[in-house]
Image (tube, rainbow, N blue to C red):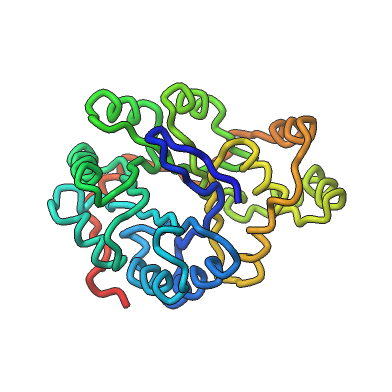
Length: 281
């Protein structure tokens, strides 16, 4: 495993398992498989409605809590609820969260950030950050915050490399974490000739080449899967290294092509939507 050091000196694994769109049963099985394969970073969220399942998997795994980097995200409809962090801890059945993010720049996200800062000061959260924020929204947080965000989780992949955003984040000592790291499963991206040639050279899959590119680019990655073989394969990235020339060829694929597009109407609906977190298994 390779690690990155966040701006508060916390060490974070650069590869983890994502649980987006996984049912509780699927999330529990996937996290158990991942921990058995050597993963130590787990990503979930209030909105995924599988935090209880993730907590169960951690307990069942036999891996000590201190070895696991647990990450979750607050949903907008909870930003103004003073017990939102405590309830999240209860669902995860843990005393602390390694990284807590504001999930969307919707609703009163300033209040949500204040909640996270309070939890950080109380030791309930080890690091805090943002998800799906753009540069202007990040500047707004930086202007008012007492504790700087350590992570921005956003869509990044070879077709959308976010170079300008990454330059901005680097200047602010904020690490980028990529969701949709494989381009939302876009077959055209996965079958790009450069990945096929490199997969033949290194004896790896095209997906493994892309994930290795992310890590060497400084992107923390959280590919999600409910397939045990894919989970194991996604972790097999640390016995080879792409050359500078190969990295450059992959960088040349950038098209500024995103698969997720946020709108004001969507953000307004997020602020009103309340995930059924109390009904999850």
